[in-house]
Amino acid sequence: MKIHYSAMFDDKEMSYHGEFEVTATHKQIQANIPRVTSVAIGKCKEKCEQEFNIKFEAMRFFEVYYYHEKKEVLIFKKVKEV
Image (cartoon, rainbow, N blue to C red; front, side, top):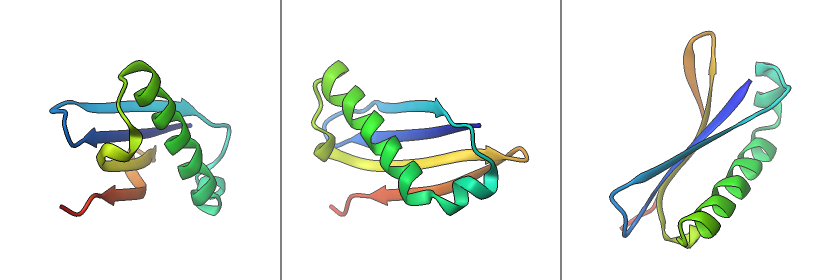
């Protein structure tokens, strides 16, 4: 199953999307939301800081989700207060 994440940053019009594969069931993901979210944050932070030279803390929006039975299941969402 693929875990997807997307982020938008304060000074950029672009958004960044990434994904990674896990060998877990829907129930296992639901039981480990903090762990899955932490992995997604780590992967996004690394990509953004190394490839785009963007500080992860400048993030305006971040979400983590996956698809189960053809439906998007949101497991984490953060929107920066302005």
